[in-house]
Image 1: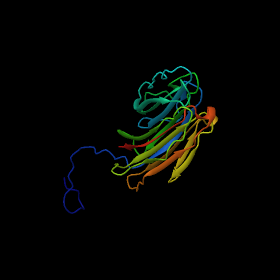
Image 2 (image 1 turned 30 degrees about the vertical axis):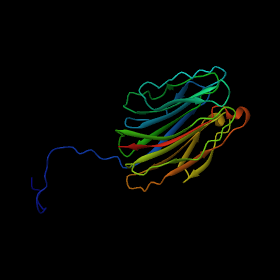
Image 3 (image 1 turned 180 degrees about the horizontal axis):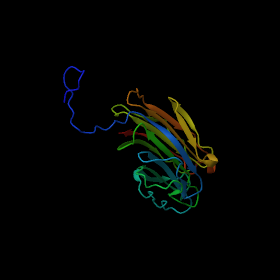
Image 4 (image 1 turned 120 degrees about the horizontal axis):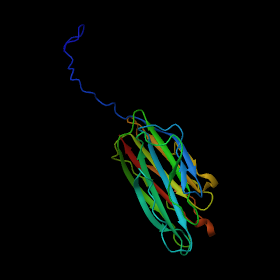
Length: 238
């Protein structure tokens, strides 16, 4: 087909070309503490991505917390380890869901429950267009030893990653969960109530220049070592 006033011809195939995902941001967050459930963020919509960090530790049982991956979510990691006390065990489930429009406008997501703590953090990630695919690159997981906890510095290596991406890190402990190092500083952080868990994130758009992310977390002493963990990685989004 030739369009008047233009030199040459423009091919009109009738095909719709999808607008590519070029930028992402954390649109909303919710948190929970000592609860098996966490609320859906308000304002979510189809094409958003929910990233859920759910950690549960139990004491004096010697058994791992029961695994729960919420309905409609896919697990990125589902790992168990020590909780830092004799007979104590921890489970971390990091999972995601690309929203399809069937999620309730309000309501709750059901995750893990234990006899000690079960903090949760949910990030709602939104793009310039709906997110279609997620490729997870989980790189680091730390659990404490019995009687001691000192997470080592973790590095998220993003070389070779296809933009846009979202770097994440999550940390939990009995009290006062904080990041002691962020290099570069996270674009945002969110802490669960009672500060038993904290999450950090840094997105890079399609025209960004990502750099490796360093993160470290506070050690614990006495009962404060219970449940200590630190995880990090990144997501390729399209």
